[in-house]
Structure formats: structure tokens, C-alpha cells
Image 1: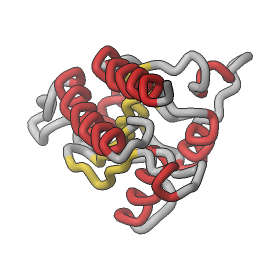
Image 2: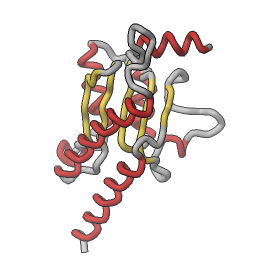
Image 3: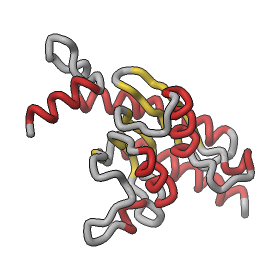
Length: 176
């Protein structure tokens, strides 16, 4: 089991040729989550719900996205969906097992389903979404994700959650 894990980490660029980590997992995850947070800020500036995402292969970002549901008048234009499409285009194929998605908020069931179909290798998210996050709808071991997908929750969760809270407080103030 440990050898399988090591081979997977090497193939995804987590290890250098001398077998030392390219970046420690927490440092790597925080680095790319900060990139996703930048995307979320772009969404907020456009008056979109501030969710941002990046998809990486090893140490390289191959796709970026943020919510565009209002801009495109499209309920499916979530940050994850935009990123999945861009990543598939960048790689020339619909399956993303060598990729990691960094997204500021836990994916919704729609996005989790798309991530499952893409066979993404890993998902790292910031803030949990107890109302609309996919994990709320998982029961009895059923998940829309691919069985081999690794999920890492809570990376920079406070910062991601604060971005969402601030956005909705502003929205409520404007509507009064």
C-alpha cells in the first residue's frame, strides 16, 4: 500500500527525482488554495458568489475558474465546472486522474458528480458547506466521486469562509 502511494505521489509531481517532497503537503495545498482564493475574489468583484478553483498537475496550474452563473445566466457555471472544462481542454481528454482540484468551498452535488465523471485524482477544498455541499448528501458510503478520488477538506477554511460571509453580508445590506 505504501509503495502504491509513493508511486502515485511521484507520478503526480509531489516528489522530486531524489524522492524528497516537491513541497510539503500543507505548504503545497495552501499555495494552490491561495490561487483559488484569488479566483474567488475575481468572482466577488463581478458580483458573483465568491467561489474560485484551480486544477493542477504536479506543480503546474493547468486551469483556473470562478463562478460565472450571473455573468453567463447559467446555473451550471460554477467554478468547478469552469475549471474541469478548461483542464480537459488543456490535457486533450476528459479524464483527470493525475489532477488535483483546489476549490474554496466544498463542491455541490452537481459539481461532485462532474468531478466523479472526470475521475479527478484529488479534491482539496476550503470551507465546508453544510447546506449545499456534496458530503451532506452522501450516506451509507455512497458518493458521487470516483472511488479513487482523495478528498482533503479544510485548507484555509477560515479565509474561504470569511470571503463567503462578507459577500453575503454585503448582499443583504444592499437589499435593505
